Length: 162
Ligand SMILES: Cc1cc2nc3c(=O)[nH]c(=O)nc-3n(C[C@H](O)[C@H](O)[C@H](O)COP(=O)(O)O)c2cc1C
Image (cartoon, rainbow, N blue to C red; front, side, top):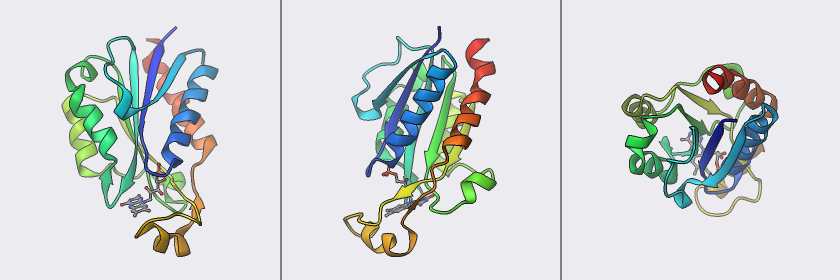
């Protein structure tokens, strides 16, 4: 059985939901999945593969995801890793392959990640804080697509079982 860590960086909980969907899908494929906040993970030596999921804010990957990759760069470069962003508040991530933001692409290159992926995000209508509350007036909604996420996890299979 492959043991996979799904580490996430979230501000408003939407990305934790994506991480949990990925964890559930991995379990359906017979893997052991450990889903944790990236800031609380102190080592990756005991897992075979890692998925790092971070929210996008103002064009940047969540700091907990960035710091996690930085902290564990050497160990991450020795196992299969995927870097995932959640963000777009429209249907674009479900219909097109969205290019990773610059530092996700750079981090993927440094650690030899197997892939990067962007999924749709979520913004609740009652989001607090500026500018989230202002954005929520026009862009509130949930664009996290469980079927798209399940298909993507299915594509990891070849790497996890080889
Ligand atoms: C202030 C703010 C800035 C955002 N900036 C971006 C962005 O640059 N790119 C993007 O794709 N999504 C952006 N989003 C959408 C968030 O990435 C999306 O809501 C995400 O699901 C939030 O994750 P969280 O709930 O885990 O914090 C932004 C949302 C807010 C509230």
